[in-house]
Image (cartoon, rainbow, N blue to C red; front, side, top):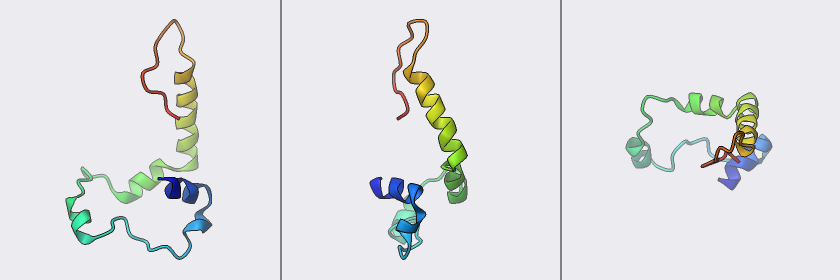
Length: 74
């Protein structure tokens, strides 16, 4: 996870790394994507979407009306 976060911040870190979604064909076959493409997942992590998720996380960390936050985004 730390490597992925580092690559998101600085894509040059991944230079020379193999471009595989899974470590083996067996793992790929076992993965159930539920019809979601890898491209869709990458788009989900776009800078614009990350900014929205961070804003939602900040909003959830500041509960109003005495609400309890169960699992804030970080």
